[in-house]
Amino acid sequence: MEWITAENVIAVVTALIGVLVSVAAVWIGRITPGKRLGYRVQLNTLLHKERDTQDGGVMTVRDGEVLGSASDGATLVLLRVENDGAVDITHGDYALDTGGHALRFTFGEGASAVDVLGVVATVPQGWDSLRDDLKHEPKLSRAGNALLVPRVALAPGQYYKLLVQLAGPATDAAIEAHGTIADGRILRNRSTTPDDESGRFGPVARTVTVVLTACVVALAAIIVREQTPPPIGCARGSLTVTGSTAFAPVAREVAEAYEKDCAGATVTVDADGSTAGVRDLAAAGAATGGKGSPAVIALSDGHGPAGHPRLREHMVAVSLFTVVAHDAVPVESLTLEQIRALYRGDVARWNRLEGPGLPADLPDLPVLLVSRDAGSGTREVFQRRVLGRNEPANSSRDCATVDDKEAKVVRCELDSTDQVLATVARLPGALGYAELGAGSAAQGLHGIALDGRGPVLDELGSSPYPYREIEYAYTWGDPPTDSLTASFLAYLTRGRGQDIVRARGHLPCATPKGLRVCGEE
Image (tube, rainbow, N blue to C red; front, side):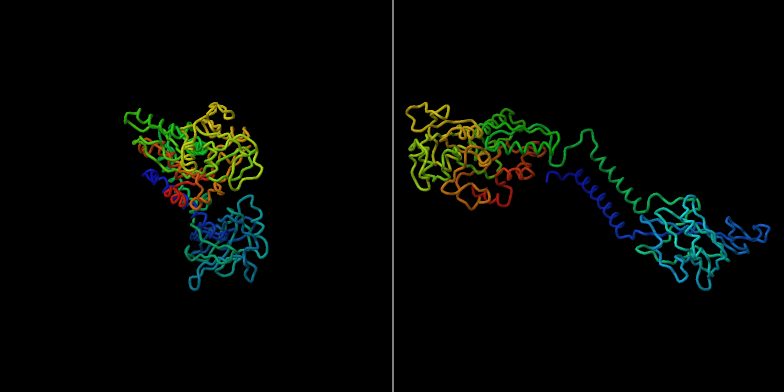
């Protein structure tokens, strides 16, 4: 759990808060009805007769509409009716009363009821449709302590105002709206002055904005530094991966993925054989004089050579290998004894090979054994698990003709898996071996089953197929946890690299099945 640091925990918690607040805001928005008709009392003031005009206190307004007499105790109330939701309110959304009106505003009830003397509606310039709705039948009217309002279609943010004259005073709390909005509701909003505009942000929007701003500031304080740290689990620098040529294609693909995921890292794969890679690592470690761990990982098919106590061994995966032959050799399966007879030199030509399972028309072609050099882990596994002994001496430089006249068989040694596959595919009668993924992809040759069993990844643990081995990664001691060596090793054995390892035909040791199989090897 190397990523668990105070800074990382704060960053993750802060990000979660921001996400949760955003989700909550969306959820609230979804469960809150979309149609919201709001109203607010913007003015509620008494009128006095001595302040009225000379015509007996009668007040007139534009369009000739009359508010009524301003007798002592009369009150002016200014109501603002608005669509403060996010959805249009249409004529059809209102439920009408028996007189055809959509809304009813009452000013007190029972003994505290105050009669409505007059009313005037005002609409902002340019919203002619609202003015027309207020003039349609049944028009804006009054009945006792009630103000009756027709249907008015309102787009989000639109509003109209009602200036009401009452016969007496009424408290703001006594003023109530009655009506029904389909799929919505009628809400009383906070009162503002007559000239106030509706807020640009609702309460939920303001809360989300404040919380997300705080989260961004907190994350910026963590992330913005003189040098930005790499992503969690990543490290910067340069690393060399050496060793097994059979596992090199996997290592290169994992290295490319790591460099893509972890900016600032350079991973170079320079395979030169399992034994040579382990020895190179040991030499690099010794050269440090005990003052650090070199940025080198050596991969080995099976255990590396002994005699290097400072090296640490890490299981990566179970690798499958296969014996391959040129397509001119029509053999699909060989017994272990037939393989051993070929490598002892008992059979110089394919048509002389005997035993069960062979086709009757084996070609009259020379047996050409194409092998790896002595430092190859693939060869070491082949010798130990298939031959049960060392391969015979090298007898050919071109892999086609014998140089040692006393040799019983034509056998050559090459430096890499790719060279072996290319040579087997080129020479009729050639026989070699390679890592399964590489051998399966080559053209001009085919794999050969051993004792009737082929290399099948899903059968590992249940099949006795012998040509398999654990792939090991070696480091000089235990690399520092914050080093590129430790980071890449974790990526290869436990991280995203496992997907690449399996896709290439290997069983990662860190998987449940891999733990059992690797423990049995």
